[in-house]
Every structure is written in structure tokens, then in C-alpha cells.
Length: 258
Image (cartoon, rainbow, N blue to C red):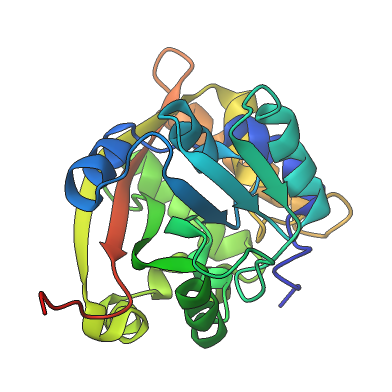
């Protein structure tokens, strides 16, 4: 499997344009449930092109975007250049470079499945304040709720290179229970969607790290098949991706009132 740090390098433009952001209701949840507020320090780990970071910046948080991939990090810096409360950090989940006990929140959007979980947990505990929160989220693309989405999933199963190996759906309740341990975690879900014409659907496909790239024997076949799927399912020149945005939030240690 390609190094997680480098496998998105050639996909930055499509990722920036065609990946979904997260519902603003996610931030509302963190404000009501976890005490997030304007001025909260947030380490957004695997911040990529800045989609989640921007939501937090708009609420006044001080966000440290920790991203090891140079191309992704630079795309995030461009997107977020107007926010004085953003700091770009060349670091990893396992070695953020941030000071001890410096942030109230660690967030990871569409990224936790790439981390070395044991080492990341130690690092998160180091940089978090004693009552800090870890917030993990994914836009979980639905694979069978419409005929189009079923066909798109079959397309990936047919042509994608290591789709099963890197699928974030491998992160289940048992994995998360082990990660949060005694601190425990809660779950919340939100509806999310994207509407595509064919060119943007193509960009969304090519933003995925498991999609064949130009020169690969499956590159032309996957695009040809994508065109056929689009033609069969489009309505007024558009198709929809439906997501469930899943949020897991908790603390790494059990707190008492003593």
C-alpha cells in the first residue's frame, strides 16, 4: 500500500474542488456537548486542504492544521490564508510538534484511519489539556441507498486499486472503544450530500487515493464505466452523493468529580 503521507500528492486539485465539507451542525454539537467556543485551541490532525479547519476557524477557534503531505498542506494554506487564527504545521498524528497541553481539542476529519493509533493516542494525550476532547469524523458515502450509489460502489470494487484495504469503514466501535479506552465516546450523525455534473463527478472519483491514475491500465476503463453510470442515472444532467457524517467524540481518560 502506498505511503499514507504521499498517496494524495497527485490528487490535491481534485481533492480541493470536489471533496465534501462537513455540516456546520457538527460545530454546533461540539459547542453544546464539549464546550467548544471562540478562542478554543484546536489541533486539526491530517488537516489536508482545510475543509474541517475552515468550519472551526469561522467560529473563532485557534486552529493548528497539522498535515504531513506538503502538497495538501500548501493547498490548505492557500484556502485559509485569510484567517489570522490559523497556523499551518508540518507534522503528523504521531508527532505533531505542538507543545504539551496546548489545545483543548484534537480533531481529525477523514483521516484517523491513516494513523498509527497507539502512537497517536499518546501524542494526543500529550498535547491536550487535561479535560480536552478528541473528535473523529468521516463523511460516510452511502453505497446502496440509490441505484446510482450502488452502481458507483460496484465501479470501485471492480477497478479501484486497494479500495478494501484503505476503506475507513474498517474503523468500527471496537477499534474506537480501544482508542478512547476508559474515557469512552459518544456518536452523532448528520445528513450531508453533494450534487455533481459529469465533470465534477469525474473529479470526485479521481480525488480518491485508490483510483487508477493516467497511465494505469484501468484508468481509461474506469472513466468509461463512470460515463455509462452517469448516463444511466443522471437527472437533468446531475447525480447526487449521499453521505452520513459520523462524529465520534470523547476524552481519553475517565474524569471524576473528586
